[in-house]
Amino acid sequence: MATQYGVSSEAIVVAWIMRHPAKIQTVIGSMNPERIARIADAEKVVLTRPEWYDIYKSAGNILP
Image (cartoon, rainbow, N blue to C red; front, side, top):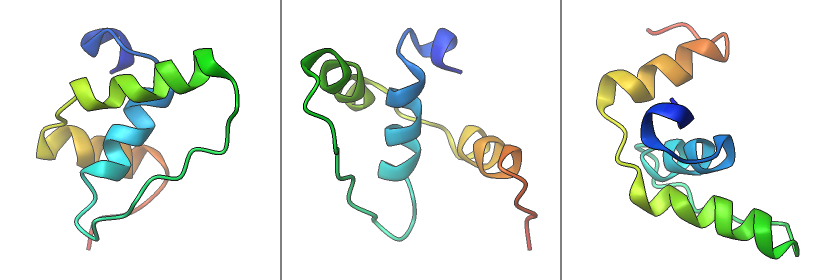
């Protein structure tokens, strides 16, 4: 998915969190400017609902 959107895997993870229905806030625990820039690319990603659930299921979660 990161390749599809042209961003890093970190950006996809943060995009997933930002799309979470519980409105989870992301806390970045990095002081590395390059990593922060990669994570900031999450703003460019708008995951579709099926994409969001694909990531959810890939973590071993089962849909109710």
